[in-house]
Image 1 (cartoon, rainbow, N blue to C red):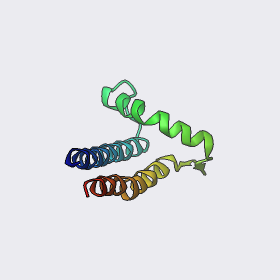
Image 2 (tube, rainbow, N blue to C red):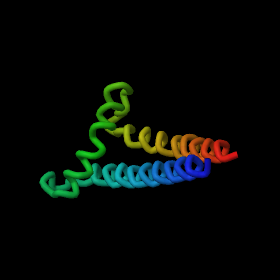
Image 3 (cartoon, helix red, strand yellow):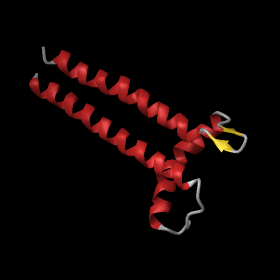
Image 4 (spheres, helix red, strand yellow):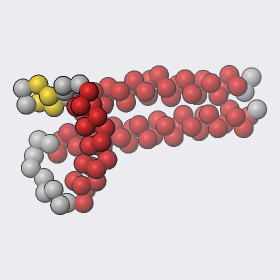
Length: 100
């Protein structure tokens, strides 16, 4: 059973790392929206390509633009925090309970 326990512990760590990386990518995208970046820059294109599908889905379901301010990145950041505080410990705890 220790294999299952280690699998869930590793899965929790990987999910936490992916969520943290996406958090910083969303922050970078939000900061770029304040300036006029070169749209042909590979870093800018990467940031837009990685974040735009999720931000577009949020904007289509929730009117996240009020007074010219886009709140979709804030909604994504709150969702990431929720997942890091709920999903990651739940997966790690599931692994610990399976090891008993």
